[in-house]
Length: 344
Ligand code: SF4
Image 1 (cartoon, rainbow, N blue to C red):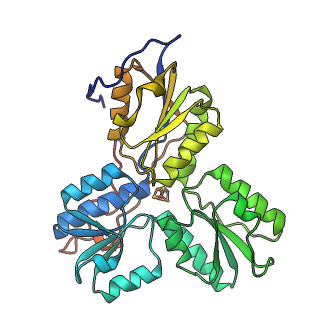
Image 2: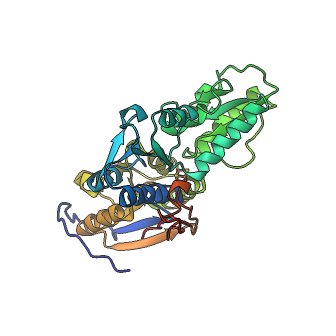
Image 3: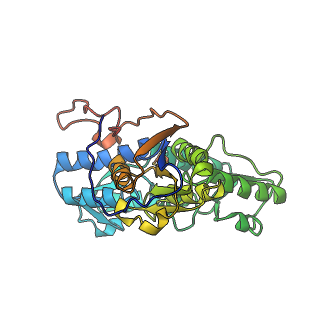
């Protein structure tokens, strides 16, 4: 579909030696779990009317949160801020059983928009805890997803936040250990953490399947392809978006001369483009495509008119809506029940 160019004229077209161009990574942007969560809030608003409360940011993107706020969503930090009996949506990052119980105690109508791939990690944690295994959960201690997963079996889970922590973490029984991970980490860094853990605990078991999700992995593979050719990589994504922040790190690691994360095109600074011929562009899994298109418009103003797609994978995964939203009030199956909208 042709896009309508938005000319801001904010960035200047300063000549550089050679041709200017953009390498546009694909896949980028919205993943199936984010799409499902955003559609869940929209659908809840349509069905129940405003306000619909959302515990934490539904997905880690400023633009998405502001847009949903305008539609009538009210974002809260904890369920005790939600009036009794109201509708509350749990974010894509998941919640611990304690949060679910608290919502039930308050008589809230909860809609669980936890990404099914996060739920999969929760289930693994519960299963290994039942087997009395000790779980080393690789992930960022202060991230909502890690809080939710570790809440499934707090007595069995120890968080390992970095490769350095792998060198010092203490375990109860090195014979009964398994590692799991947050879904949005750097694949390479996680493997380094596992390598260090295994050097200390050779009987460490692997998870039954990858915990780092397909979307995180695909976006990292795509940025690895464009980074070596890029003088600058621009990642659209919010500061609290783990997978977006990882994309900046991966770009630098794989040879980009510079890399920056921006929430909006308007944050790109003219000086970042000094001497830059090739700009790599990508976006995190919680970023709507409109924000990338705005960035491309601004880059076109700066002379980066040629856009080459760098496609490393095709994605067609779609998740069904949360079960609380799958049926209309009359009992008929909701038209979007079998999948969230995949946005252009
Ligand atoms: S990034 Fe991965 S785990 Fe997170 S919502 Fe998207 S698909 Fe799910």
